[in-house]
Length: 152
Image 1 (tube, rainbow, N blue to C red):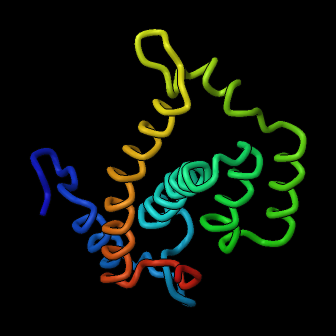
Image 2 (image 1 turned 90 degrees about the vertical axis):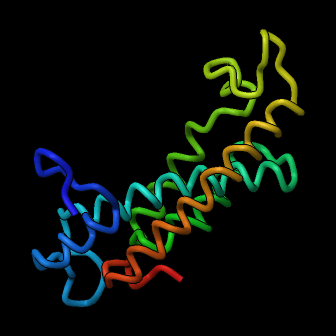
């Protein structure tokens, strides 16, 4: 399951290799500072964006509100109380609005024209394309026993 040069050919191969190296935490899930843990946090970070975008699409909420809700549905269960409080404090201090994000990223803009409709279309496309990949990643980690036990 290795490509030329010893590179891993798939996430499944990487996770199996991690398992063979003893990368399972005694309480379940991936051990700290392993490739399996890195994959878990990568997936959770992307799922955070998916949840923010879904929240915005559901009700055109403000970016701070969508971010708060997205955090609760994706990352919050994995963090301790102090980390959740730090996130909330940071969110209150520095979250921009959707227009500021649009100015810096051109998200929702096409040919120099920005619109809520284009923003919604881009967010929907991101969610539609990425959510199945995240689901597959979670299934792979569960199959080999390297999923965090806090994951529903």
